[in-house]
Image 1 (cartoon, rainbow, N blue to C red):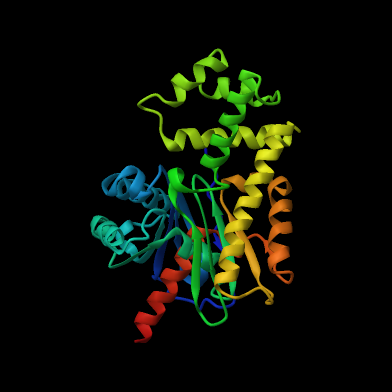
Image 2: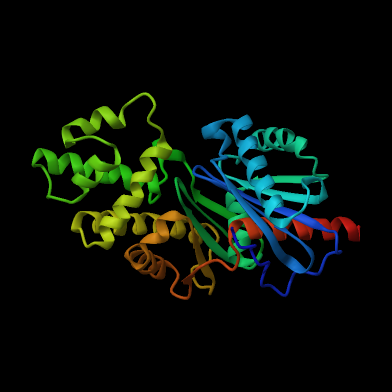
Length: 330
């Protein structure tokens, strides 16, 4: 029998206690998965739930809404509350930079029955979770990648987020594609030998490297599936495969390039601030973070790299709480 999850407190002195019945929902949705948390009085996480991807540009508005609803239902079930008891929700999603898509998502989520629902970008909730509104940056690198920041004057800027065809440098899909290029070169004798050849054959379920093109160009192959190979590349890097290590280090430098672009846009080169990081590719640890730190330090010597204060879903819940408090105060 699964042990009941203990409530987790969101550690911040900034959140004022809500009423005993004020339950809010925070959602973090991306190209791989959706995570929802139910937060109660005094900022306690009462339950959490996960579901599939909810980037509307990848799966469509309807499927994205279904994933959010499923994650929310699971979070409510773990919290032991009914969905209709939720009074406010903040939903942070990849793929909603355009206002019309945000509005379509908000309309699709109306059936949740939550009185106040706000749809924002995944970068919005990640940035809040990274700095709690203070000057700083957040680098998001999962299936895709983007960097956003805010300076002391409240100005915001972003770099990246162009998708797998035009960008997403340093992301899981980018790492996977760079690795597949290295596999092709190694198989042809144009590049160095690498354990990534065997890893790719196993991941894409083929017997020899020559068959990889059939697998990766199959009509049912998705960007998410290809991005999943990025995890195997990171594992190979941890096992000291030289080619995999170079790819992971290059990914770190690419993410740093986005961060430096944001720093320069916001004129933060001489300031002290945090650069937070969120996303699955950071499972590579210092193999990725060391080159990232080095490049960012050149542009902003007083900056520092550190994990976010709050995870994105918890940050979304905090934002919902603050919006609710403002509404009650008004």
